[in-house]
Structures are given as structure tokens and as C-alpha cells.
Length: 196
Image (tube, rainbow, N blue to C red; front, side):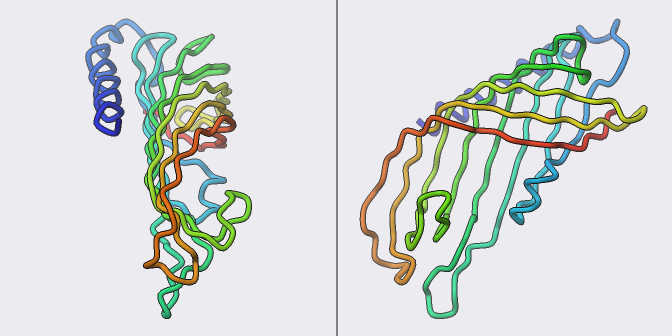
């Protein structure tokens, strides 16, 4: 399943690159780099890039990395949100790319090592695994100046999550392998964007 997911991501990127020749008659920004401001609140380094495919279409990809594992000196784990998240999205803009309303189709993929987070259902547990899925999103982009935009996005969808479960007190004793089907929020962002 992981290989099929990566093949889908590379196919979307190839589609985006092949569509660039249709942009010669259009004016405006061709690309932008962005960061999700609230995501930094989880100590996650994140950056994204978006390219214009046509007047109403763009392809965006975001990456988030939280390298902090919460491992204590005695081998136990404290609270941890360690993860790598890749989030490509194909977007349709109702006005024109990078301006006003859009809807998107995203296919997130993540690797994670999460422990002792009550909100995520891992209280007194550590889960190490991967996940992939699909979702739809809605967003709006405001032009702040010639090169700067602000964007808000929310999304819902499905994730398949598979992880090995461990107790937080002993990182070496696997309890079981957990497989979950999650339906719910898959995206929330307020991003600051620099447009080219």
C-alpha cells in the first residue's frame, strides 16, 4: 500500500510539471512557498510549495517534521508527537489560482512515534507506525501585498493507520499491532505564503 501511495504522489507531481506550458498566456503568480503558523505550536517544522497548473488549478505539497521523541534517560517515553507528514493536494480555485475560494483533494501520508497524548488516544501508551488516506478541503486565500498571501484551510477525510503499541514505561515490550480506520478532520491550516 505504501508503494502505491508514493506512486500516486509522483504521478500528481509529473502531471503538475507537464501542465506548466499552458501558463504562458496567464498573468499573476506561478508559485508560492508557505508555512502553517499554528503547526509550529506543536514544535513541528513545516514548509509547503504550490505551483499553478492552469488558471483555476494548482498543486500543493506540504511537509511537516517533528523530530522530538520524548524519550527519557531511563528508556521510558514522555509526551511525544514525533512524526513526518507529507501532504500533497490538487486544488481548484473558483476565481483564479492563489486568490479567494478553493476546494482541494489531498492524499496525506505520515510516519509517527506518538506517546502519552490523551487527545490522540495514546495516554500511557506509545504508538509507532504509519498512515495514509484521502480527503477533501475548503480554503480561502487573502492577498496581503504583491508577494504575500494569507490562507486558511480545513479538510476532512479518511486515514488508514497502522502502528505497533508499546507501554510508555518500557519502550522494548510491544503489546500489539493496531490497525485503525479514521474518519474526521485531516487538515487545518492558517498559512503565510510568499508568491513568485
